[in-house]
Figure (cartoon, chains in turn red, cyan):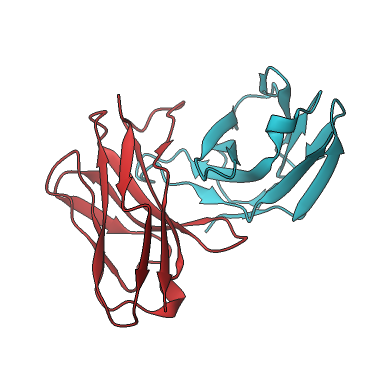
Length: 114
Length: 117
């Protein structure tokens, strides 16, 4: 059972370039999330999805786009990379919104925009 | 909006000793969940312990326990018999119990715990 898989693990972008961070989960979870973690800081929610075809903005959505065409995949798109987007990006998933639901995290993508 | 504050950027503890990490939060809700996550250098986020706000009893998981003070909006983590493997960043997190909240977590800024041999 792979859990939550993120690719790539590391990436360097030039200002203005675009890229897609991939996230896939094999646990049939309906909830998926994208967080970013700036150096020495906590995680901030970028976007989330409660199921295929449904996405919504989190705390810091500007500069990002997401789609959720399948239950398994939740890619994060950066259209015009900026230095402020240098961060570690975490994808996470959970099954149901129950009282004791556990959030499963991927291992992160470290992105540098130079 | 909810906020979570961890006032200790770094803490240090001697191996086998006990350490307490502080967390306060601000919310107008009465029903919610609180969590402590551990993030080792591998960057993986590992759930350490969770607490339901409607439960008065403090959660415990082996060497980890919490002191949940709902009126004071305080949620501290106590690590007993500290081990070298406990060295990591620790994040306190809040989640609303509202059905339309999307299971989203709000994180504090983290506390880096160092364990001295």
